[in-house]
Length: 221
Image (cartoon, rainbow, N blue to C red; front, side, top):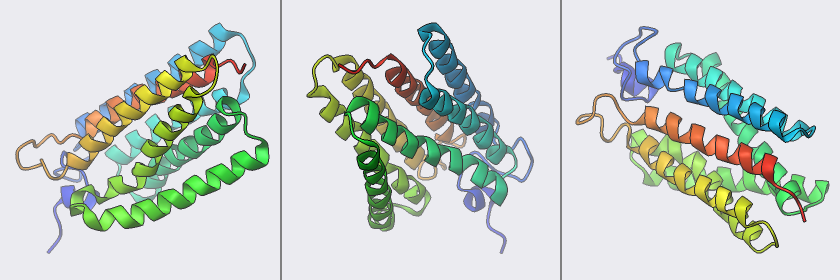
């Protein structure tokens, strides 16, 4: 028997194979585009040449485009267009945070990113079997939430970095709420047919903007 589209593609809102079978999941990707444009405007206002923050803003734009493609044309290639920019942003931002916020050298920052990658794989493998089938896709993001809080605590110990630490902590809290909503999309499907994945998009756009703003505004002592 052919599985239902929602089961095949993992999102409660999708009930058919049509392009616009996930209208909310599709249109809410505009929030990522807004976050990317806002990041660029912050860069322009700041007036400094900031290549890492510029690249991260570009990745936020790519996240919006890739996710829109996947939620309208759910194929393997659009899945890559959705997932790859997210992973690049997450690990790239962590490396930037180690360098810019905590003063790590290049080699130490690379080692830190590799450690986060290993932790993400291990945590995902350990958590996924404990979650309901429809929520297992969220396990891979748990390491990023922990990384946000960990970096926020480390930055808080530095002088003149309270605003950066507060922005990272706020991003971590919003991401934790967003991850919870992503995990509830399938379990709540019977009672909430539109699902909750679209809220994951909206809240994550806020998270990414906060992270971009923190990176642009931070001034090392």
